Image (cartoon, rainbow, N blue to C red; front, side, top):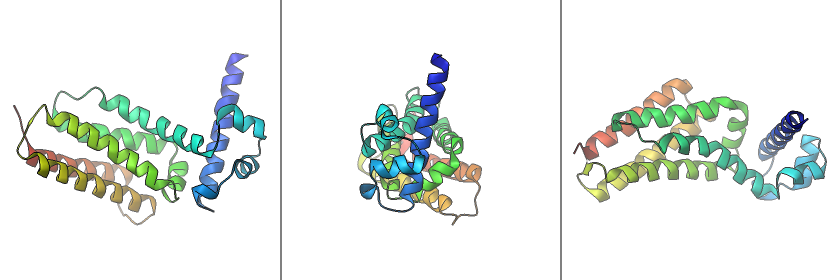
Length: 191
């Protein structure tokens, strides 16, 4: 019985998430109501409120769910800093591929900025944490470079989702990791 309830809860959340992603294509996030979501998902309000308090709660849950996997991977740093960019971006790729249609809709919506900011924040926090483990030549230059690199990476993903890139997702991941690694190589000298 508990297993069926668990599957039902997962199904309800997916319906809500999918409905919200579809609605984000039609109007800005701040104009979407619970009524809009329940109509689109073809569920009742009670089902919605059994899982979420309001629309921002849905977005927060999606972001937490999306980035908890990334955070788990980067909470255990690789033995070699050279491995970090590809490990991090492969995790991002795996998450995106888990529900590519949903992420395409979100990245084309008004909610994409918030998700992009979260991704940049995670990458920057991770790199700044590891600054202490290596000899950084110039802290201010390092911070500037990683902000620039993270912004460029987000731009590449946004262009890919918009269909404006000839790269495959694998190629984008490899290219992004290479860009980050070049910044690391120029900023770090091993202790």
